[in-house]
Structure formats: C-alpha cells, structure tokens
Length: 204
Image (cartoon, rainbow, N blue to C red):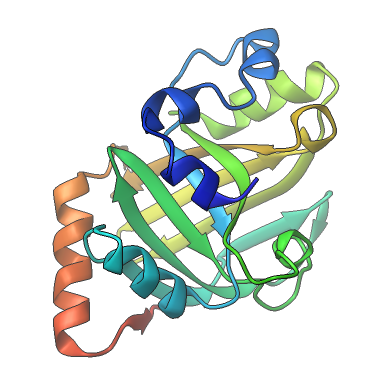
C-alpha cells in the first residue's frame, strides 16, 4: 500500500486504524496503530518531500542493529531510518540497508514510499510475539537498536499473507524503563538536526 493513498485521505486516523483490522481483532491486538513503517530508496529525499507537504522535520539516523535475527538466524543489518509524525501517527522511513533483503523486497518499482508494516507499542515484545507464534504467525525478525541509554526492542511477525502487511511489536526503554517517546522531543531533535545541515546522524 502506498503512503500517498493514506496521507491524502480526509480521515487519516480512521484509515490508519482500519488497516489489517480483521487480523488484529482475530489476534486480540487492541492497541491502536502507533507506527506506519514505510520503505523508501533514500530517507533524506523522502523526508524532505514529506516536510514540503507540511510535516515537521524528521529525525534521521543511521547505524547497525544491535540484534538482528531473521527467521531464527542471527545476522547483521545496517541501514538508515527516519522518524516523523502525521496527526499523531509515527511515520518510520526505512532504507533497504545492508545484510538483509527484509526491507528491500518491499521497495516500490517506481520509487514511491510503500507501507510495509504496522507498529504497535507494547511493554513486552516477546510475550506478544509468542502469542502470535501460538496463533500460527512466526517471528520474521527479532531485533534491537541501541543508542546509549536508549534501546528499542522489536519483533516483525510473518502476517503478510493474510492482510498484505507485517505487524510489528515495539518497546522503547530508557535506562531499562519502558516509556512512550514524546512526539515533541523527536520533532525538536529533527529540527536541530536539519538546522545543522547534517540530515542523517550515524549512531554506530
């Protein structure tokens, strides 16, 4: 599904919350959609285009995943990604990266931003992942990003066959304590980053 189709909808929030709704109800996922995961050729170019449409500056980061296990096999993944918001929904921009074709296979042939997954904030990623595994949906990728005292645990579930979208569980922790990232803080970091002229910071 193209990101442009969702952004142009007059009732953006309802459209987002309606994505993969049948599957989510079947699996008992009652949390709202927190994130749209969007695969793009280049995060800087994609962010600039979305900012020209009125979105506040994206926070762009590059680096290697601290943990990346794909279909049970440990590997190495390095990429660039961006975080922005539209009407309270996080828009995560993802380049194909290196060491995996997980994102690359979702690239649009015409270079248009394509929604690959829906993200849900949870406190226990493994508990939710195991719940879906027991329902017949394997873990596609189990991973972790680390940036100093901040860590982001995530699990992509193999649900694409049913609704065309992958479901992801995400948990943010600061010094080991779970939290929901404040929108204003990410937007402030994005603005500072943009004003410095260095659009994508490498964090390792």
